[in-house]
Length: 504
Image (cartoon, rainbow, N blue to C red):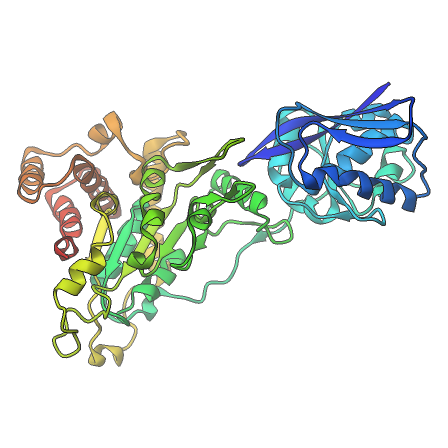
């Protein structure tokens, strides 16, 4: 007789169904696990044996074989402990077979039989719902899975609780979803003195999810501006929150099962490796660009990042996803992020200040920003200089627009884009437009088209740069509540594209 239980194997954010088969056959007592398990899965037999012994359940004196099907799919992680125990309990008649076959389970067992929290219960719950099965997981991991309302989620603290639940002795109640987290944001855009052009660029970038590059001397406020970007971004929609939380669930970043409606803001250090930024490692884990999905990736001191790391950003910026290729698997993660980058104009940072500049000006600036390739810079929609703030301006009162005022304008512009794109999940902001839709939505009058053609010819804009100017102009028109792109909107978009950073 073969008893069956079900679990999942993760490949990126995808959770693939795995059938756990348990067979008891005559022969010398043995406990083997087959089906391409990794070391953690192979060690499950010792944890399961000890957990059953803690419950005073003795294994039969037979040969126990656990098969993880499909056998050619790599199985990684300690979450296979619970489904292996479920299949074994069903095989020896402790729990009903239909209970183990109608449930997707995952969880790590301690030697005393308690269940330890695992990552990935949210995508596992979505997979269970697709297969019309319930989900069983550790109690500490159940709140995030309970956000999937299409299936029943049961959280158990120990393996004994699982047995009592499926034998009807003490049924466990369905788990409740975790809280909607709203971390306080005490950083207001009004704190930034001066820098009106930079604030305007920040507003445009937030409204259309455009990439932004800021260049300025040390202390001019680049990092301060970027840190206040989350305060003007609209909250995640339910669909975006679920997408983002699935990635964070795989990475083990969901706090107590809560889902946040605040857009991610990731700021890796410039010493980060390629695997940390793009994703990778032994288990092909998501990198910073995927953890920033639907949010912001802030890369301060952009030229200090390793050249290969920067070049790997080019393809994800264009496609919105990244494929991590390994010898045994190809894992794809979504990564629609807004890149906000900052840099000094040169290594010393004072290229435009004769009193403090080094002796290598202007060669030092060319060498420093020359680390950034043309193809990467061509993908940055908005490029601005952030000049130093005069001492007199620092003493002025905070009389600019607050983050709440700017956020209201951004939310209104985003609403226009939502109404424009309808239910198309691939189009959520103006930065996503391409092809025929870009031509239809960003149609220009003859005067504006002549201006853009003249600028493109004069400054040698690439086809990508031409289209990115159109997208930015459409966002500026949305902020102005204009149905058409007018010449002032286009001129402002061109001014951000033709910043003097191009000459550095």
